[in-house]
Image 1 (tube, helix red, strand yellow):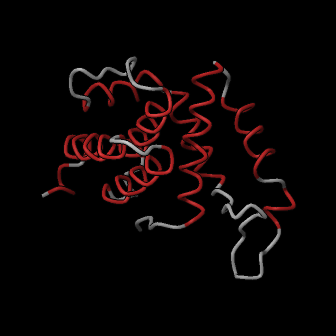
Image 2: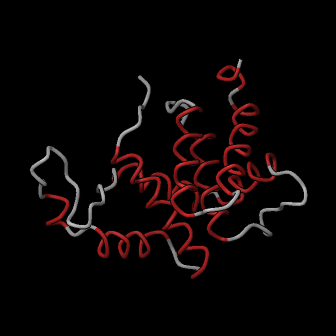
Length: 164
């Protein structure tokens, strides 16, 4: 079974990047950051309400994230940050280093690298598309192209059969 694109999964990826960014800047742990993000954006009443259109968008128009994926991404990156950063080093070109990346871009790449490496049930093309979309949500410049190139390179290293 393969995972396909859905609004709650896309929302989880976006929220995971936000959480990783906040954790990086504040030096905070995963649990308090996730609790704050969920309290600020999605209250339990918003998560339980239906908007009348067959979805569960909250009053701000945001689709609530798939909580299992959100937690898996944030915990996976935070529990193995050194391993995730090794994937980044594998696919980044000079003059980029993990430490030299802008914090938000680093969060996008960390979540993307974790998913490419540790979630083989998600096709590589889906991982690439999802994180290019996340980068598009945050950046107006060349960052989405950098994310695309990074994930293409990493995917070819980690999942060569999907790129033949």
